[in-house]
Length: 277
Ligand SMILES: [Zn+2]
View 1 (tube, rainbow, N blue to C red):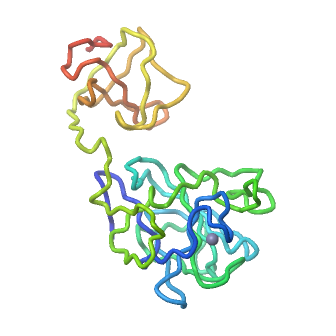
View 2: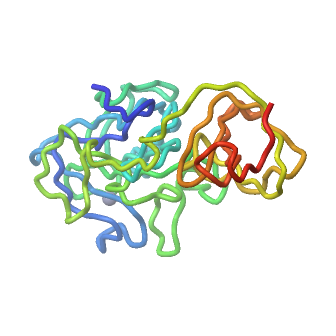
C-alpha cells in the first residue's frame, strides 16, 4: 500500500505491531545511538516491511547480526516534513538469503523478518534510519563499511535519527511506543504543502549578490558552497510566493531541482532581486 504526501512516499514504520523493547540510547546495547529494538506481535517471528520503495545495498554476515542496509530509490518525505533520500539498517533476521543485493522492494512490501541473528536475546528487529544515501565509509572496515562503531563501541548506521522523526504509523498497532512522538500521515507538517506553483518559462538575471540556492523548493535544504551573484541568471519553469519572497524553480546542471528567491516581496515586481525576460 502506497502512502504519499504530494509526490513523495512517506516513510512507514517497518512492522505492523509496534512493541519497542529498547529505544534510542538504550543502556543494554544502544548507548549513544538512535536505534529501536522492535519485537513483533509475540515471542515468535513477525515479518518486516519496506518503509518506502527501497533497494537492498548490502548484507553483512551473522557476526554483524545479518545486517541489511537499504536505501530509498527516490527522495521520500520524513515524518518531520523534510524531503530527502532515506537509508536503513535492519538487524537480526535469521536468514537473508531469500533476497539479493540490488533487489527493489515496494513501499510496505514484506521483505524480511525479526530474529535473533548476532547479539540478540529474543526475536526482534533492530531498526535504524537516517537521511541521505548510504556512504561507503572506510572507518567501518571490519564491521561493514555502511556502519561504524561510535565512541562507546556501538555499531550503528551513520547519522541515524530518532525513528519517530522519520516514520509514520498509519496501519500500525502500538503496543509499546516507548513514549516517543509517533505521527500519522495526516499529522505530518510539510511547511511547503500549501505552496501553489505557477508554470512559467523565463530567465531571471540577478541584480544582487548572495542569492541562496535551495533544493526542490523554498523549504528545501540550502545547498552549501554555491550562490548566485548580480549578473548571473537562471532559466526557470515555475514560480510561487512563499514567506515574503517570490521564488522560481529551475533545473540544475546535475539534473536536480533548484529554487531561488527572486524578490523580497510576495508581490512579483516589488523589491525585485532580478530582472525577468
Ligand atoms: Zn538493538
